[in-house]
Amino acid sequence: MGLLIKAMLGALVVVLIGLLAKTKNYYIAGLVPLFPTFALIAHYIVANERGTEALRTTIVFGMWSIIPYFLYLLTLWFFTGVMRLPLALGWAVLCWSLSAWLLILVWSRFH
Image 1 (cartoon, rainbow, N blue to C red):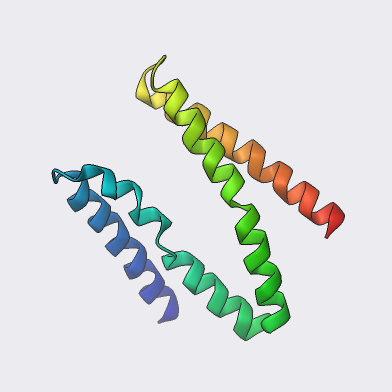
Image 2 (tube, rainbow, N blue to C red):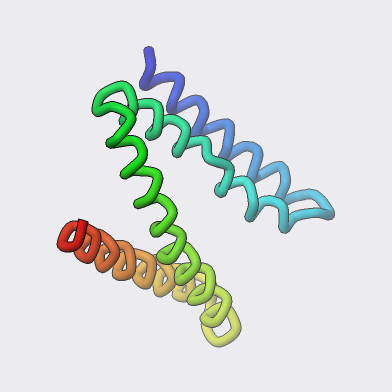
């Protein structure tokens, strides 16, 4: 049942993004993915399964995870000016993936 609720929350977010993208304030659709829907779920699960100290570690790691997302946005902004959207999205996802991998590697080594 919990998995079904999580899936419905995800679907609701996608529908909300689609609706906002059609309004005159379409740019707000870029804010919706940053609402901590999935973070709330992850934090709840970590706290219940691993305790408060693990939750606090997860929160700090989440703060650092802003860097890959910023690099994704920066890359996408740059590449949409010089190439077609599907390629720009692909390169942006690749940059996010590499920076996320690097973050995990560094975190694992020094934490």
